Image 1 (cartoon, one colour):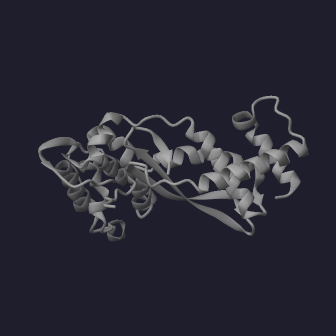
Image 2: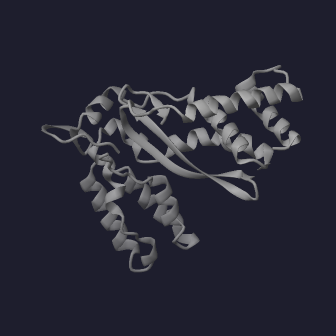
Image 3: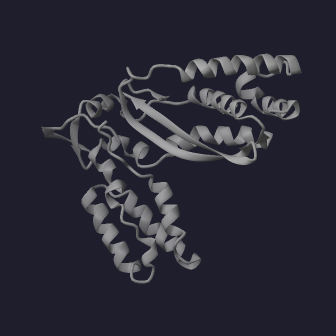
Length: 251
């Protein structure tokens, strides 16, 4: 990375990472860069096999500043652990993001119809039970499918997985907002640099921003229920089913 770009990046980091009044001379910047690269290498080498992961949020995100000649695309995974903490980190059940689904489906409608379609979709995603959710889905199809068939994809089962988990967790697991939050900080900082010349430098700097954002993570709602989910306790429409205990699964 060129010295000018590097300086601008560090100036953008000053408040969140270095603190007000931190020295920004070329030598201090290079020392910090070397320190962060060492910390990043050590972090990448950590053994994660002992983590009790309950939920995983995964999303691919583009960074406005390019790496080399291309726009950077990064795959981000954040986990909720059985002890309740959020942290970057078989038998997985998949839940697709409703926010992305609403945007993608709405875009398939003419502009004049999008607001109405979005209202239907929001009601579907916030239904209090799977049965109610599917009734609203069927109503949505009756209203729109004959006119706009391209708006209807066949991946329904992956949209309603969250009903099999505690209702207190729905707001967290039905979207990828958990990933979007820390990456808002990444976009803010990388927009300053516009372009990175070196992939290693870009990864290191983005990693450091995410580590700072991680300090602001909080426990998910009703974090005490994570142990139940980890141990395979069965939930139906968000309520614990006392009659059944299944094999351990995660979403």
